[in-house]
Amino acid sequence: MERLTVSMERLTVQDKKAILIDSLKSRYKLQYDAVQPIPYIKDRLYCVDKVFVEGGTEIHIVKGATNEKEGPWVRVDSYKDIFTDPRMKATRRIIEAEAGYGKSTVALQLAYDWCNGVKDSPFKDIDILILLRLRQLNSKISIYQAIKLFLVGPKDPRIKSTDIKNIIESCSSVKVLLDGYDEFPDRDGATESDVGRIITSDLFGNIDVTLTTRYLPKDYDKKNTKLVRLVGFDEKARDQYIRKAVTGEDEESVAKIKRALKSNPILDDLCQVPLFFVMFSHMTHEKVLFMRFNSVTEFFRYMMKCFHSHKSNKSMDRNTRPHNVTYELKFAELSKVAFEGLCGANQQLSWRKDGLCTRLGQGFCQHYIAVGILVEEEVSAETNEQTSTTDIQTRTDIRFYHKLFCEWFASFRLVEIVAATRGASELKNVLDKVDPFNLQYLYRFACGINPAVGNRIIEYLKSSKDGDKFAILCILEQTGEVDGIKDTVRDLCSSRVKIDRKSDGKLLQRSTIQLLEIAARYDGVKTRLG
Image (cartoon, rainbow, N blue to C red; front, side):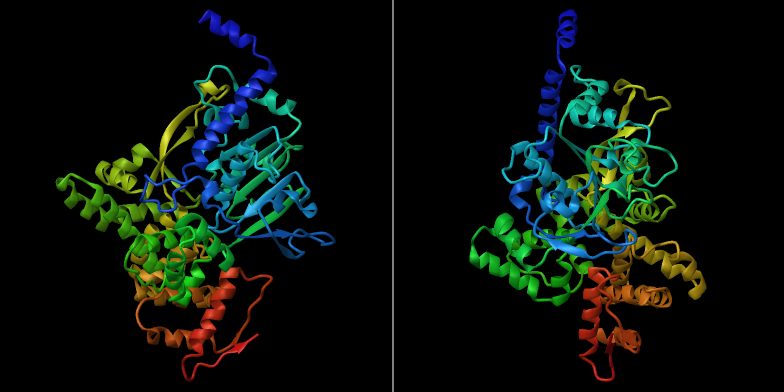
C-alpha cells in the first residue's frame, strides 16, 4: 500500500492526463459498441459507426436578427457542420429534436470519432472529450465528480476529481457533450447546479460545450449559443441506413423493406422519425411475412408483442410462460407509473429500482427488464454533503428504454382517465394539465387505442389554441373506417387550412397535407389551402 501511495505521488499531470484519456476512451467504447436497433434482441449489438447515417440537420442563422427567435433555419450537409460551419462559431451549441430523432446517436458518433481519430471529424485532434448522460446526474454533484464517477470509475485511485479539474484546465482543446438535458433530474430548477452554470456559461466559459435536448432550457447563454435541430430521415437517409445496417447490397431485401414502407403513406411519413424507421426496417427484414400497419399505434402494439414473444420463445422454463402472458397483458400499474411520471409537476423519467419493484412486483419488474422495455441504470444518489468522489453514493434506477415507450404505456392510463370524465368541462380540467406539444405521442397513442376516447380528445384539441392542427395527428391514429372520422375531417377543412413553414413543425406540416389528401377523397368535403 505504501509503494502504491509513493507511486501515485510521482504521477505528473501528463501521466494523469494519459490515464484519464485511456479511461474515457474505454468507457465510450463500451457505449458506442452497444447500439441496439431492435431493443428486445439484446444479444445483437452494433458499433454506432456501422449504423449511423446522416439525417436532416438544420442550423439557426441569427445574423442581423433583432432577437434569437428571428432568422432562418438552414439545412447543412452533415452533423460535422455543426462544429465546422463558420456561421456556427461559438462556445455553446444546443442540438434540439423531438424524441426518437437521434440526438444521443449523434453524441455517440462524435465519441467514436474522437476515440478512433476519424480523419475528417472536427473531434479528431482535440485533447479531451467529456460525454455525460445527464439523466445519471443530480444538482449536488460537481461536473468533476460526475466525470470521476461515471467516466473514470470511483475505485480508480490514480485520479481524483481535483486531478480532473487540473487536467481540463491544462488542456489546449476540450469539448464537452451533455446529452439529454430534458432527462436531467434538476432541469430548469431553482437549485443551482454545475450543469446549469455550464449552460449559462458561468462554468467552462471558454470550453466548447454542446447540449442535446428535446426543448430549450429556460435559462441559457443566448448571446454565445448557436441552435441546431435534427429533422429526421429523408428518402436518401433511409436508403443509406437499409444498405449500411440491415441488408447490405442485397437488392431484393432492400426492395422488400421499401415496398413495406411505401405500402401505406401514413407509416411512410412517420418513418421520417429515425427511431421508428430503424426498428421498422430491422423488424421487416427479420420477418418472412410483412405486417401491414396503418398507424404508429398499430406499429407500437405489434412491436410490444414482439418484445414479449421473443422473451417467451427464448425461455426454456415452461412454468414461467403463464406468468409472462399475464405480465404482457396486465400492466395497469405500470401505465399509472408512466402517466404520473410524464404528467406530474416535474416530469419524471426514471424511478428508484427498489421502490418501483415494490409497487409493480418483483416478478413483473424483472420480466420487463428482461424483455428490454425497462432498463436498469446506475445514477448518482443525493446526499446531504458531497465534498469528494468518495462521498458520492450511487443507486440503481429503472427507466423505459425510450421516452416514447413511456408515452405508450401512459396512454392506456390516459384512456381510462378520459373515459371516466363527464362532460367537456371535466375533460378540459384533465387535458389542460397534459401538454400535447410536449407529449404528442401520448395523445396519438390514446386516440389509436380507443377511438371513442379519441373522438373526445379531438374535440378538446379543436377547441384549444392551434389544437386543430394537432388533432390531425390524432385523426390519423384512429382505427377503423375513415368514414368514422369524415365529419371531423369536414369540420377541420371547413375553414382555410394554413401551412406556416416558419412556425409549424415538420410533423404538423406533413400531417396537414395528409389531411387534405384524405378530405379530397370524399364528396362534400371542400378545402381551401392558405
